[in-house]
Each structure stands twice: as C-alpha cells, then as structure tokens.
Image (tube, rainbow, N blue to C red; front, side, top):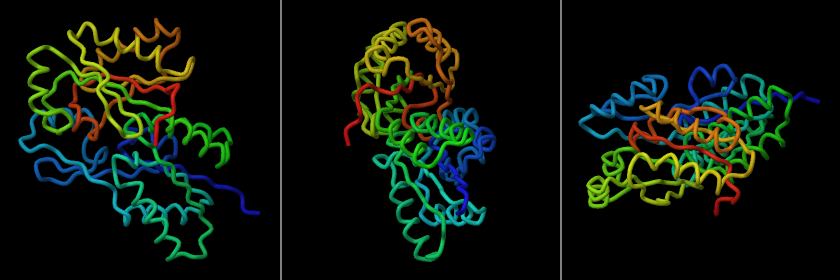
Length: 293
C-alpha cells in the first residue's frame, strides 16, 4: 500500500509570509496585482511593508486578480511529480473570488489529462480573507508535521472556516471609499463626524457592526465584541497594518480581558489593503455561530 505523502497548498491572500510557507512546507500560489499599470506578484515582487508605501503613493488604484485554472493545474502537476498522494488546497473564500471555482476547473482538467494519476485533490473553501483562513493553514501544517492524516486536517480546516470571522476598523476612510465598499457620501460624512466603521466579514459577506466615535473607543468596543462572539478559550489572531503599535495595544487589552495572549500578530497584505487601506487594526476569532452559506 502506498504510504501517504500529503501536501498543503494555499494562496497569498492568506497573508502567510513566503518565509513561513517555506519553513512549513506549504505550497503557495501568489495572486497577481497591478500597480500603476505594472503586473506584479504579491510576496514575490514586494513585501507587505513596501505595499503599504506603494498604495499611499499610487496615482492609479491597485487591482488584484484571481489565480487562473492554468496556474492551479500546473501546481497540481508539480505536486504529483513530487510523489505526493494527497493535496489539500485551501483557497481564498469562494464568495469573494473565482479562485475556488478555478481550482475545481483545474482539478477536472488535470484528471482528464492524467486519468491514471494517483494524486487525490481535496479542495477546502477558505470562506474569507487573510488570516481568517491563513491561520488555519499554518495550524494544519503543524498538525501534518505531528502525523495528522487527510481526514483530520480537512475536517479541521472546514470547521475553522465555517466559524471564523474577520473584524476590523479602517483608520481612514479614503481607501474604503475608493474601493467602493462604502459610498463616497457615507465616507465623507464619517470623516466629518469622526466616525470609524467597525466591520465584520463572515463567509465573504461584509457588514458594518457599528460606527465608533473617537479612536479611544475602538479597542474597548473590539474587546466587548470578542468576549461576546468568540468561542470561549479558543485561539485568536490580532491583525495589523502600517501601525503595529495599535495592534500591540489591542493585543494587550485582549490578553488582559481573556487571560491569554493572541496566537499571532498577522500583517495584512494587498487584498485587504486595497479595500481597507494600510492603516487598519482588527482580529480574527472562531465565532460561536457558524457563518450562513
């Protein structure tokens, strides 16, 4: 009987760094992003910190694109050539990108061209963005290193994705306004009144939980929400952008309130940055409620 050789794969919208992916043996697909008309690849052509500066200076708003079926199929073929028996691929949420559908298409095409392949391909919908599924992939890699099998890993990834939520506050509304997530009029009114939208994304569906007046109230409101929404004693992640001190302050407040620190401080990449801006603070939690399909 062929011994299992399992490979994990994800894409760079997970905001797993290139170095971390290499250290954990995670195969990464890097999303295309166009900056000032120039096609680039996140993590390969620029760091997150460099992108924060790029978006501030850009005359044309950067745009991201999905990973093509051809690129995904090439990855399947490479992983099969490495002698892997199973590939577990967790994608950016299907509700926010065509990448999951492209992965399905590439899977069909792969087996049409390689009918005798012994590679089993397991696709998992990340249902969200950034660390909301990136954290789960990192944890899955650790489980794999400890000897976990395909069924355990796929079950863990799917359960996490169904419950995980991304919560954040953009500290300036100009990027939200440019991305179209909030109308120009609403963004303008918010800036005049000193309001910051406290946003949540679950299953790629975004909503504004409340509008917070005064920056001093942001962290207390976030702590209240974590205590109300999070599964007790579950891990949580603090999200940071160009202002890491704000993230550290949030982490300290959550540590005090919950009695244990965040699992990680996770830097946002181009996908979130293009919609919320580089100056953002937030968190990822495993919610008590499962996200609706």
